[in-house]
Image (tube, rainbow, N blue to C red; front, side):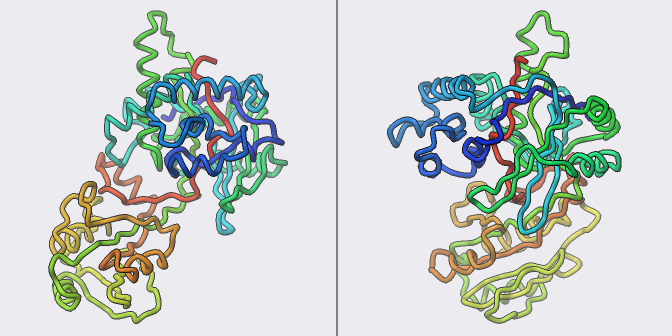
Length: 415
């Protein structure tokens, strides 16, 4: 069962939400955050990217930067830019992109569920990155930014989404990137109780995006438990901020590859080697997008190709082996191009599908890269199957868009 609870959210007044809210900390660098926050004292970047309040070049890990984050969080509350609700709520947060809207429940998720594996992951985490995020949670004593979960579709919860969102939204605005954000406060006690009970019937939650933030939030909660000799189990630090979406609402975008050289091969030799494991079809000069699972798009020397792996090269009964990212990593990047470690090899780079095929074409045509490879997106069913079987996806497999907007609601660990 999945344990969730309502909480007293800390959030901006309706008229300030567009000014306060921001993109997540990890999708832009310090200078980009400085530019986006310019002239806006209310921007959440002053809390999640507080190095922007110092001279350019300030180390974001400097203790003064963490202290500034705490100072700013307190100031936002003192100024009334962030205000805590007077009772525990659940919330519904919806995002609209390209005419499609996905609806998620904003909940306080259980630290124990993460530690016991009921909140399932599909990526490895690095301890250094966990510790960096843990520092932010510790100094603020709050989860400033949410993590992104999925759960198997549930009829009762779906009906609640439809009922709540039929009414007026508390927040409803379009951010500068063109994404729509809509937010409802669930105030009815009976509905709140039903949400808690219905999530308790769900066997597992799945981390869609934010593995390091999830680990950091849970580990800080565990630290607080171990440091409290009077621990009861109902303290707020036993929970962390998450937005959980029905799996059918989510759409994973392709995560593509560009490579700097052909490992000493000519383009003709490279295409010839591909033919051993792939059917290679010349698609001409018009950008070609993979049309189904086990179909790849190659851009090389101004032409697009479809690559279809021969059936003997993969096993659809293997949760990892069936992934197109595995097939391409093994049969193209490793065996032909000599790229063995996707995390560290400097010859390869990764391009989120939100940038489109034109970005792949641009990077190859510019001479920066020799070839580009576009993949068919992983499905939510594949992701959940991998998590259920205890497997880990290869690096740079999933790209979720839109990202969760930060600053719509914050979860304090002491109240």
